[in-house]
Image 1 (cartoon, rainbow, N blue to C red):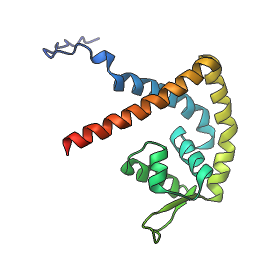
Image 2: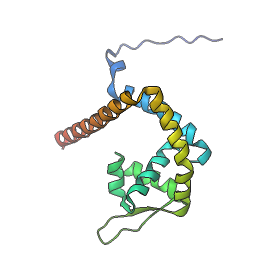
Image 3: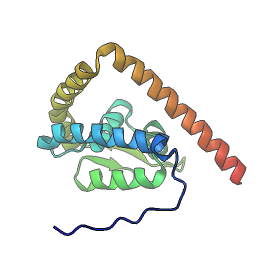
Length: 162
């Protein structure tokens, strides 16, 4: 085995392990993996499931409103929609008279969502049971608060840069 000599940085990295972004992303990637694995038999990933479920709940829904509901930037939303549209799961209208495009589920998307719901429910139940119902409800409330605070901070930072 070849041992590589690791060069130590002379940068001051104190506190970076405490980074909000790093810790939230690490947890999000871990949880995403659990849900992706559970949904694998349906051909959907957790992101596709969430998008289809959100569309089903509010269709027809404008691309902008969908992006806002999922806290996604327009570029990411467009990319995610293109993937699901190419799979024949949803449709995105041409711009309407109000200059908006609307998303609706296609029959294949409705079937994919129906097939994935029992798998999603099972992994959701297992996850909540592991965490504890009371803890999960507290986490859910706190995560919503953190999302709202982050959005406020983002607006503040963007205003200062303008």
